Length: 329
Image (cartoon, rainbow, N blue to C red; front, side):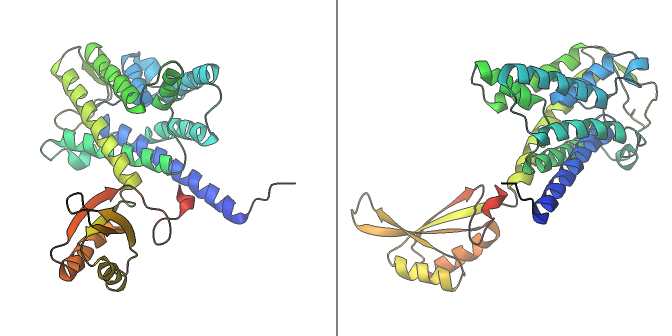
């Protein structure tokens, strides 16, 4: 039997690849237009490519071995090692993101290097602002790609290779590789195209000596970038899905549940409970709602029973009737 491909599945597939393309553009734009002109640095394959590009002769770094091309080469090497060691476990979307990241880095490189610098150079601490903005743009790009099932490669592949021999969490692999790249940037002589204090970018590049104040500043910017990217990815991926789970313990639990259904227009679940001290069987009323509705429900609960015992906990995602559809997983 042939596999039927509906027009809806085709449109969904096109949407996913368009969003991944947009995500890789955000990543490349944040890195090349914000982080690098501010003298910043980061981790992953892009960070390693930036570091290699900065220590190469200008004749190679500016024409043949651009950051975009180096990212592609690094990811190809990691992909080959990954296939040899752990087998073919990389989806077509990961390969697409790796290719599009390289393309977008080379595309963004055509834009004027001071595009974003001109906006921020008159503001105090403009370098930090640009690093934060660039990291947020990179984080949005990564999160958008993740949500469509894609991956930027790099550290993901390294983690798979390491886990073949030893179980190490993704976070530890990310931290180790990023710290290694950032520390290396402090110890090496590099030439980078970054803006001076007046906001003008030297076309010949700025020489950063090992262990110099600029080298240490770049390392600090790198750690700021890593933190902002991590927060942005978490925020974009779960920010629109975050909900609260409210547990209500009261004497008249049936009246409380009816009130929530009629006034708050939310469903409620009765869970068997028993007080450890009183040994009296009772039921807890559990309500799952969006964060924006939490204060309203708590107000109704207080009006119904001011002596009720309430706990509120955050849940990362809720799927089912009234919330996100299961096919979003």
